[in-house]
Image (cartoon, rainbow, N blue to C red; front, side, top):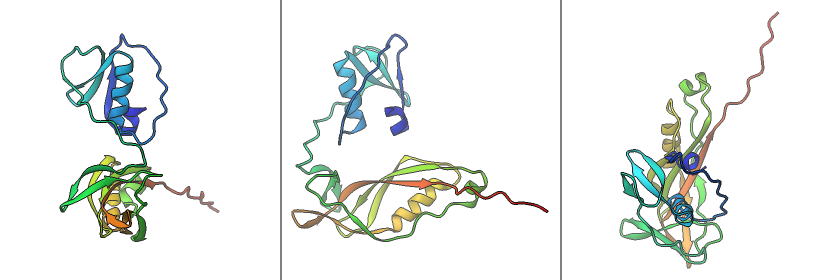
Length: 191
């Protein structure tokens, strides 16, 4: 599941056979993977472009770095800086208000993608600045034939009422999901 959500190849060594059920909220995927592996006596090892789950800390590759625990939703979670301002991760039920879209069109569906009947979801991680502009766009999941680019172009043009922390506008990291779906076209009847 983590592999599908992140578009990162995660492979378990063949000797590892287990099923794990977790219920996590507001926790980055790499922390979820770290928690699952530590609890089960395993390690996550970066090996080329993939992550291998191995017993103990052996195997070639680099162990995933450990991160500090995520603060509870009642505390703002700083994730970096933008133009000298602290950027926070927006979390539902947290102390930071959600940014509200005030302007911007939906992404255009590229003709080439329509003709190829490509559908799916583009996931973009962005920063919404304290003035409501979108910047620092990173693709978390893309689609071919110009769909990713169409999503980026649209999201970059959107404007927001910024997020507020203690009544003051603050930049926030925010994830957008742009769904590209073709409407079923009715079959034409011929005389």
